[in-house]
Image 1 (spheres, one colour):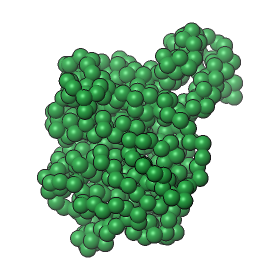
Image 2 (cartoon, helix red, strand yellow; image 1 turned 135 degrees about the horizontal axis):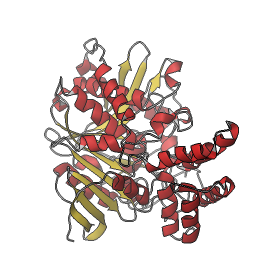
Image 3 (cartoon, helix red, strand yellow; image 1 turned 60 degrees about the vertical axis):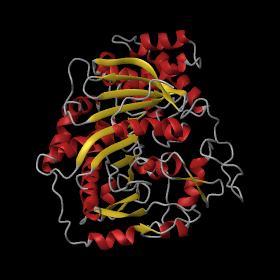
Image 4 (cartoon, one colour; image 1 turned 45 degrees about the vertical axis):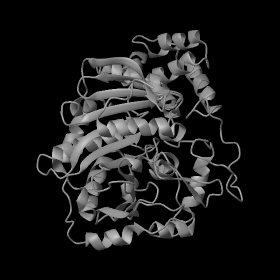
Length: 499
């Protein structure tokens, strides 16, 4: 499905390392060392090469002249009067493009919804989906935005748990080539990676704030999920470097869900399957001993075969939520399904999404250029197969640790505990490598009288929370609990520890 991030690439990397020993006549010990390094992350010696690259990018990045466009006129042209099939709403919404590179003709599409109340004082939140190359309109119309799409692929219904109940939410389709974002330079699509994305995202944000100047200096947060576990910390790092010279971006925190952090994802993923009874525990322990530990055996055939068995199990179920059904019928209905509510999860929702955004009247209302535009949820040419491999497998833990040094910033990580794509086990292993100091030990937290999940707080304004019964896209599966978590993140208050 590849909706947000397809973890089968983990096995591909594993197989690549093993096969490289035969293709390039590399010794087995060398392959094992590379595999060990890729899975054991920062440990006691932190590899800061990727972090230094972000710093270099930030320092050398130069913004183009932004005075050539009348931003207020463009803002009015971006206003969306009504989306086709939408219910009546009280807030204002916008959609349009910000050109991040004039000479290349590279423009990123955004969708912006103002807060339902006190928009003048509510913070600004940027949301990024992952992939790489998957659209943040998925977040806007399937997860945390004000609307969901009916099964007819033509009409919308209200999400009462939208995050714009709390903040002004800006959804960005990044990098160029994702969703409605585009480039006129074909070479822009060659060797896509984190460095390019971070640069474009920062330029977008600066230019967007010229169009919406009332948000300059407003409390600003970056949130996202899956591969946005790369995008979000890197953009935060870029902002902090530039804030040494200009301070109109008042960054106060980051929030990332089921994030790809580049650490021990194979071992954590398979341990999660074993803990849920999908494979015998003994099978996982044998695989761990023979294929993942410091001195794995020379039996590469066993490792490959066992890894493929794990992946076959994932392919036979909804790996984004192991408790949810798979979509078995992608056909749209003539009329929307009766009694559709946000609390009744529709496993075929992504197909309704693609149908809706490919309607000519929808693209016209959202100010999409180059109509008709073929919108796809995830752009294959930007996926993990084509993404810069150094960036894709880089550890984000050094950047998280650096962000924690800034007292004004809070860093929250949350994890739906039924996700098999980037499981709660994977995230807990990654956080363990950070050697965090516990301030408030593991406790249940509550949402509307029910246990919403479990949480632990660490020194450095860092919090981790699980969301009980949620899959990879937490606001989709548990909208009430997700909104509770988001509210407390924005308020910088502990999650409720009593019903």
